[in-house]
Length: 240
Length: 230
Image (tube, rainbow over all chains, first blue to last red):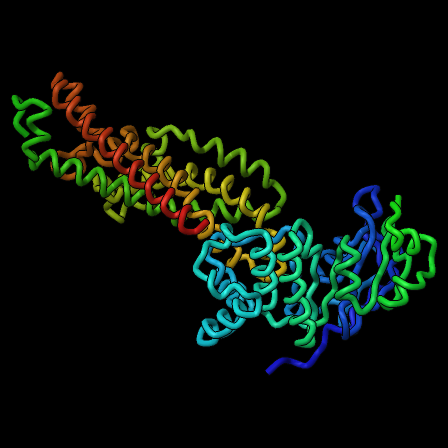
């Protein structure tokens, strides 16, 4: 039985991340609530990845604070992340999932069934015995998704999950994201791909130079953006 | 061991004394590698993962210890195990166990230093993933050692090569006692000093052959493992 939802909402309150003299994120005020996927968009270097890491709890804010369900020091046992270039452990595809299940303290008696279920979810059942590092890019991305789902997260952070994938592989990944959302898992995703954002997002957050420029539901963001930067971004112009 | 026999005859006839020396040499060297691996692999992994004051100095010292002079190690172990030494009551001096201890001390820094580098490289790759999966320090160390196992074979081979070729430490703490603590290297030293060069050469050939075979097997295991594990 799943534990009661407790990590949502995730609230970033005037959060900043400063490394040396470089301010990567500044004055971030954002609430990530349960529901449809939130998609972070913005040009390279706008702070999308750092924001994901901050909300995941892998980074501490230099200023401001981040709370998960109202708590500051919530352990990340109910949050998972798939990095832009997920690293496959040196074992089989199924072995990668078994490892994640063990890390999530799933009982050994449940491990085989859960592994099979997660492989099926990402359509990799036939490749369970194959060394994970020998899978294609799209297959590795789906395996990383399955591995992240091993701990039954409430929130799943995805960093450019379809970057460098061909359309077929991107569609397969998007299908998994829809399946994950249908399970009630909150997806927070960074992407450059506006098409992917339009198809998947419930709401959009536009970042530029480390600041949140605009937050809106997907329809509003694409049809009636409020800011000059958002209008330029949606129009495909370069945000510099 | 018949002194008038040629080295080749000794090898081909399976001379019992020769086999005994070879067997003891292998037992001592492989035991030392096993002991050093048990200490050196986790130690190397911990140094690779941990951030603590003096870490850089620790790495420099560890690397420097790879060049530990065997006779100095032999002398230190001799002093520890001698009757008047702190561990004299164990009665281990001039036994194969003392030789294993000396060789373990000698090769632990080699295995730890090489493992540290290998594991640190893998840690750079794995750090974010293991952090995201909430894997604790012990789990990280175990995972990195397991996933780097085929690369770590090289570290173990370096340790085995050092142990198998080493003579200074084992002759001091083993005493080169015929039929009890005589290894290939100590026998080679002895036969050379006696002028029995054919026998010394024969033992040398056996020693080199063993090192080549062990390295070949390890290489094969590593390649097969890499193919299977990716």
